[in-house]
Image 1 (cartoon, rainbow, N blue to C red):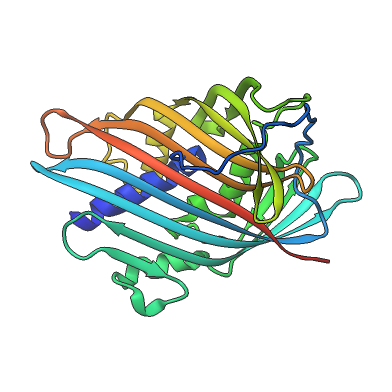
Image 2: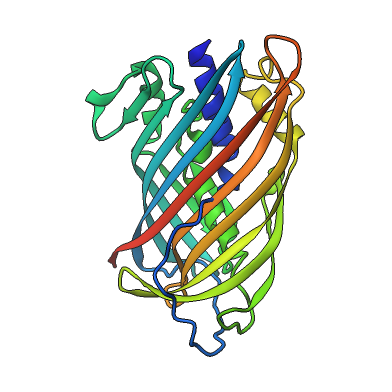
Length: 313
């Protein structure tokens, strides 16, 4: 039952990967004395190899059989990304997954720990081996000039519990972050309406603001904050759970009180989200597997992404 509960928590983490979000952190003083600048929101520059990382943390508070469980799940993924121009328009993006680290703890029994760089740390070998099936797999995508995915193929194993946070989902997340970049001249302190299409999961609507500029690892970046509400289709989540074999364990699914905040460091010269931190919070409701009252599970999900230029070609 415990392993099943942890796998269910991890599955929810994967299903909500495209809704990533994050907590505020302290930042040094920003440069706010800039004239209005016009941003160029498109896909990253071609002719470069990038290293993309993503760190996700999910905290859940679940009551099972009268016992309170605080379940924490963490995922770290590293991808190498190669971007090239296409003569007919758009760009090709080839990604290879280089590393996956995963950990989950419920406060009961031994925590689950998997790291593809340190196989000896595996605490549940059969689970880790499935997770590691993503490592070394490659994916190919074609995006338009706005960074929207037009087509793609993935080698990623569908058997991996983390298949839903693979390269295509990370690329889609980057495309959604681009939807927050303004297409008109903006100066520090100005705000604008922000929205994002989350695909079949639903949508986001809120407000964005240019906080100012800061140096990030030697690059001049605009810091943009976004906050608002998530509108999630619970039926889509329920249907996806059925496809994984958890449909019988999750009934009466509902999503409420869904909100998200995001911080973005945008490198306008390279047309690159150098760093992003998002926090999503929501309540998952479902029928208790033990009968009786409906379970309400408060969830906080934190995700941090970063992109660095590895080399030019």
